[in-house]
Length: 101
Length: 108
Image (cartoon, rainbow over the protein chains, first blue to last red):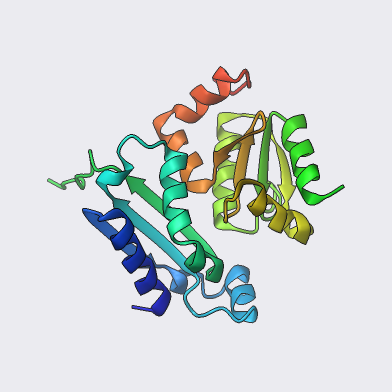
């Protein structure tokens, strides 16, 4: 895992004590598009695109905007260094994966 | 006019505003493209601002709301969210409800 990915993971663990946390580095999917090149040209690392899935009791009762803001605030340093960040944050109900029969 | 004043003016003068990378016809970022598709699908009229054309607006829109990413959607001057939030709201039907509650016409 890259240095930014580990830092994202660590901070989210500390702040939200999540019951589920996935930090997915999707940079390889974007290696050829303009954003990734710009990012590299600006001196950015190879870690440019992240998708995070986080489930935590601490999101209970928060609006979508508030959940996202809570996460973005914790990760401001990391987000400043990357090109793209997407997030699925929930308080924990209804997260069963679809079961194929 | 400062970037902040310009943004304030744009979001107050247009019911729905999308700050994006590229244009609705030629989006230059996957997240911007997703929001364009959603707004087009629900049939809401919107003004779009291409942040790639103006570095001051590009930074200014991040400062305006203290929100670090683009795209950003505003409805009646209120910040709604970025791609993830708009997408979730679209999937649950809340987007359409919110737009019509605010008096914005959408396709049936």
